Length: 80
Image (cartoon, rainbow, N blue to C red; front, side):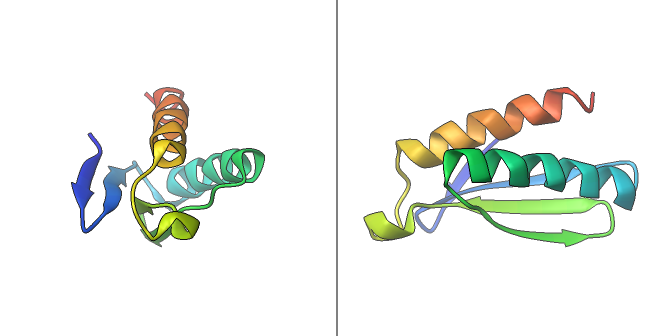
């Protein structure tokens, strides 16, 4: 589930290994390019953390963030 913290959407994803986490990140990167909305994220081994906010709207959560979050959830479903 996405959580709101400090005017950002946040979610932590855990995968079976680094390669799976990296494939997930690659698919999210493709989505971000398509939507022209890029996340702040980190990856440590099998864990990917993503923060979403709209920088040009004063670093707040907008519909663009919710849209990307929904799309990311769709990508996640292909891993289950």
